[in-house]
Image (cartoon, rainbow, N blue to C red; front, side):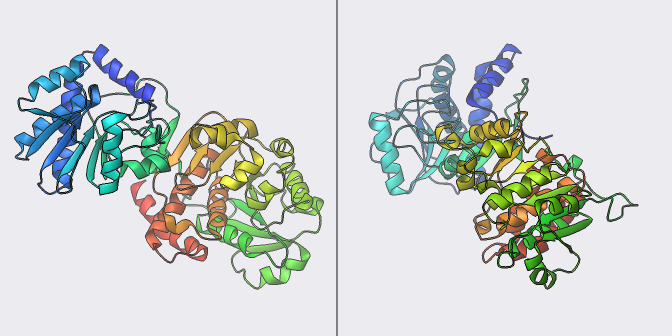
Length: 483
């Protein structure tokens, strides 16, 4: 089952539902604190531990973790920033039968620190001694384990509330990840995220998910035993002029490697020779005008337009012509920028089967101001998808895929090796190839992004875009074994 990502409010609702169904808050707190202790015990060598406890239930989790670590033989000191302020936190503090020290303003290396000061729901900046401690801990590069989220990091955005927050090497959270655990800024602050089961359930409908194979593998378009190339989908890619043809070929090769049965590069006459010199299994067809392009695409399941297609009126007209063919469109790069002055004309060409794949700069050209005014990238991508009436894949270390119906996913396996020219062209090919085989566009975009990242991880340093299609078979074989 796909794993949901919950907002702070949704997580609080899951807590309340568990209590209403007969599980006391103290039982949930005991499970949470024990999970923190277990994670620390499993991942770190035995060393002195200082647990920083705040006033609320996050602090209560810290008192419980301190007790369990002490009982496992760790040397533990508890420091409190404030007295416990909730019934459950007071209960947990009362069960810690050793001294509680005031919060020290002079932490030192050589100990492991557990940040149980404030959880994901904190909405105001850290103040006073806590803010000073956060600054000192970052200056000293202390080893910190955070409970739920590092204090000062907003659970719904991953952003620092105010001007300072703690940074952890590991964060232990409960039941489901929150946006802070998956968005790039929050992930940097959280370090490794350990997800602990404390017996909660998600009862309300959730439309935000971790992008991993659990989300889409059951509907992956593996070929039937009697498949042939046309039953596996017909993908076409629009090439640029002779001096800018490589991007289209990268997309075409990506689509072929991901399983599309028949892939064709549609080329302006002046680029036919250079394309022909570099294509083998991928077919080649000419077009001279937007009408020619539409005619050449009538039998296509999917057309990719944008990779090095050229920015301007010609590309805009070509896209408008393709929109009349009935083929699903994957719109990338130059095709997006060609509509920067009239994005509504682009949206008029689209439907829910189409996919836009902008990086942040292209996103700003087509959806001006949306990213800047949004609290985080998930909200921005959802607004863009609703406005465009199409699937939007917002690229980045935390790639977000959003559908017009509100579904969204966040990629967790992105790798920095993918930050290389042409990488996005291959991604467009992966997505187009999956849609051509009959995969629903939102799921195809999610799967394409995950496979793309997995290819990057398999290669590692030194990756160039040309490597990516050849890495796909090994990733696909791994997925095939899990189907």
